[in-house]
Each structure stands twice: as C-alpha cells, then as structure tokens.
Image 1 (cartoon, rainbow, N blue to C red):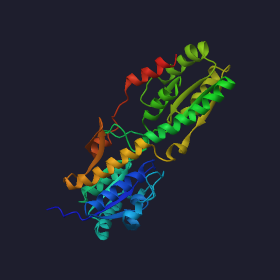
Image 2 (cartoon, rainbow, N blue to C red):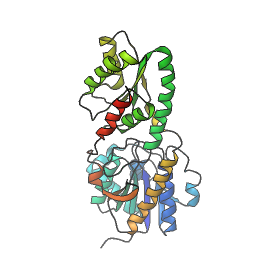
Image 3 (cartoon, helix red, strand yellow):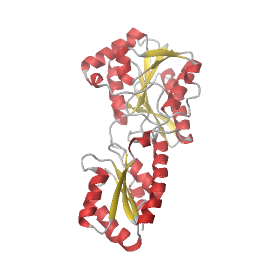
Image 4 (cartoon, one colour):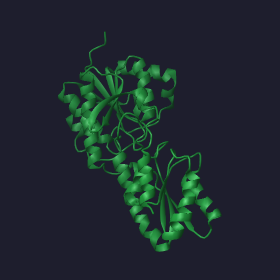
Length: 326
C-alpha cells in the first residue's frame, strides 16, 4: 500500500524559464492550503542529492510571481543520469521525509522524474521550458514570454535592416523544435523561418533570395532556429555571402536573453493553473504524470508521452509565413 503523502518537495530543473517562480508559488500555496508540508529543493536534482532543502511557508513565495528565473535555482546533474545517482536520490527523499515531488522543467527533468517514480517516489511534472517541445500540452511555462522577447528584439532589428538594406539572420532558441522560430516569424512579419522540422531549408533560402528579397524588398529578416548540426544562422549567412555576394548579410544570435525577464500575464496564469493542478493531482491519486493544457483545459500527460518529441509543427503556420512575406 502506498504511503500517505504528507510532505511534498518542489524543485526546478534544467534550463530556467520565465514563470517558474509563479509555478513554485502556486505549488507551495496550494499545498499549504490543502494541509501538506512543503519543502523547497535548491539547484534541482543536484541539490536533492546534496540535501539542499528548506521548509517553505507563505512568506517563502511572497512577491515572486513577477520575477524571472527561479528562486530555487537550477543546475544540471550528471550524477543523476546514473543508476547510482538515481538510487541515492530516492534514498535522499526518504531520508529528508519527502513523500512526493513536483518537478518543474523540460524533457531531461522528466527522465529523472521517471527514474524516481520507478523507485517508489510519487512524481508530478510541470512543463517549464521556453522551447514548447513537450508532447501532450499546447504550451509550456515560459514559451509565451520568450516569444515576446524575440518579437521585441526583431522589431528593433527591422529598423536597422531597412535603413541599411540588409538581410538579417536572427537565431533563436528552441532545442530541437521550431515553435519559437515559426511563431516569431509570423508575429514580426519576417520573410522566412528556418526550422529543424523542415527538410527544404536550402530551397526556402533560395526562394527568399530569388523571389522575395531580390524583387520586391530592400531588406529582409529570416528567423533561424538554433541547430548545432547545420551551424544555424552563421552557416546560412556565410552561404549567402558566397552565393549572393551582392547582399549584405548579417547575423544576430539572441541567446540567453530569451530565458530572462518578467513573465507575461499568459505565463503567470498558465503557471498558476498548473501549479494548483499539480497538488490536486496528488489528491486525485494521479502519479507520474505531467500537467498539460489542451484547448484551455488541464490534462494529465504520462511522462513517456511528454518526452516523445513527436509534437509536430502546424504546416498551415509555415504556409502563413510564406504567404504573408510576399
């Protein structure tokens, strides 16, 4: 028979995302409201192994809903990828009196969560990642804020691109998914989006040069999803310089500014709803699932489905980028 849950731990893991603090706040306040003892674990799984934890109360999460980053800090933990580290993590939970755990993070975080679940620790996950690459949920915590950060930056780049008649390649994050690139291209009126899900990257670039930039425009913005395999925006710009030397091609890599900043209202509300749902999931005897959102409704998604990377890109949106860029 499963041990009754009295104490719930919460940690943030992997890359930080705007809205993680709002999620921590919702988890802690809902947990306290429902009568649970709440434990904050610092620095992700690394902190769990080292016993870096403290009891959280209402004051612990005061005035953090608007803050970016995570008050619990986050860190990568190579040891937790090993069987020995996972065994030690489960043992540490029991030593600390933690009966269940809420993990806020992305797919790597859920792999660790699954291993703890296999060792008898009840787990609930919240999708905290700007990449929006988890299956079973329409959006992830932090995605909307990152998207708005990109839009603001590209709007400013558009001014200088037009003034100097330049072709700008703007590289955005996304891990292995093109959601940030595709939707920021639509929102900024960019001429193209180069994303991992597309197999015709070179053809799209040639079409932009030959039929868009060359014939009707004196400047262009191309949003490029980061891609270590192909070299991303830098490799594309170098190709343009060689094949079309008449164009002044420049590269802007937005980098980690996409992770920072105060979360948008959308992310604050999403994080708050999901945080409350995580505690309700334990009360409903749900175990080892991610809290997702589909068509505005909270859903429970098995960790295996959340990490399958088969979410897929809406091809209609890709067509929209092309149609609106002419």
